[in-house]
Length: 92
Image 1 (cartoon, rainbow, N blue to C red):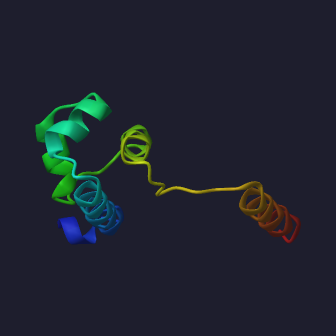
Image 2: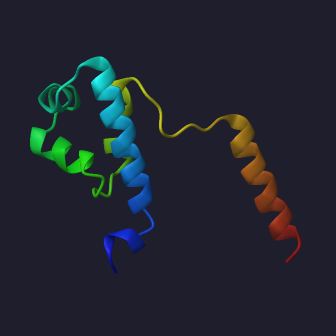
């Protein structure tokens, strides 16, 4: 399976693009971001290439370091998902 066929690949590229733009906006280098995330500059470089399958922990660290949000959920979304699951289960 090629990178482009992996389900997470497009998300990884999108996150990399947003990160890059935000870093430019903040005047932040890869080294500076790595220090804020407590990781290596090499890992930041891999992420910014858009080919890294990121964990939720890594995404959370990126969000905190750059003061941005990729994942947003609120109670309305969770309630909607729960209701749909209940409706689906009751139709079986």
